[in-house]
Length: 314
Image (tube, rainbow, N blue to C red):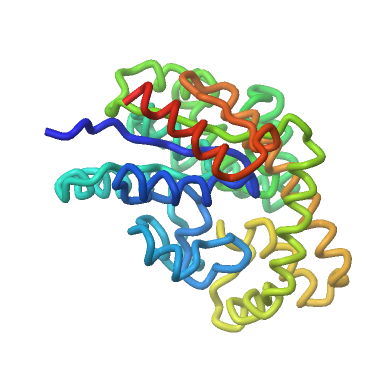
């Protein structure tokens, strides 16, 4: 029976994790499971840096293009589907490689977080939703900052659904979301894994990569992609996809609220801030093997360092 340890490649957006993951998949005969909360949506290709058709032809990918942007797909639903994919991958005699920047998904799959163990309170949810409607999303966000500043750091103020969920966890359990996540992560992990995460010694190098990626997305037609999604009724302001970095700003540009130049700068700023939150999440996880691409002269050197870590841990 093959060694079934899972390989995971994590890191902030534009860090180069996808390119490294493809090389590792080919070496270790893996199928790639995307851990990107926006690549799950059909039609959101350019703004999510979704793997190209050629890349998907090189390695079998999973958890990409599984729902429409008009749908809200929860972390619990994602993890349930990902677990089923992992079982299928193993049944085919392949190894699973997780790759993506959504730290919640990585923690949930490898830490076996049980999203079903917290009771819901529909009345409380409705009360909070009404409060947000009357006084704005910032009101709920400040409530969360008061009780759980760590969770507030990870959740965008405009993501009212997640803010409400964090407040609901506190009301129904007496634990902050941060405390609840920590306790859940201390349970036995369902899989053995080797986790590699990318970061840059020089933050300016990562930020420059982010800026260049955003410029490339604009050149590739991000504005047209967003316009097409809006025309199809797929990118409402009340959807998770509608709040995605790149899509929210470009929608405001298309509807005349801001200029294209303002949209581009806001996307770059929002992405840099998101990268910072991604790194903060990963640094709180145990068992991370950090690699720094700006310490490597070539992609091959980064690949060799990664394989050394994996070979020593499989």
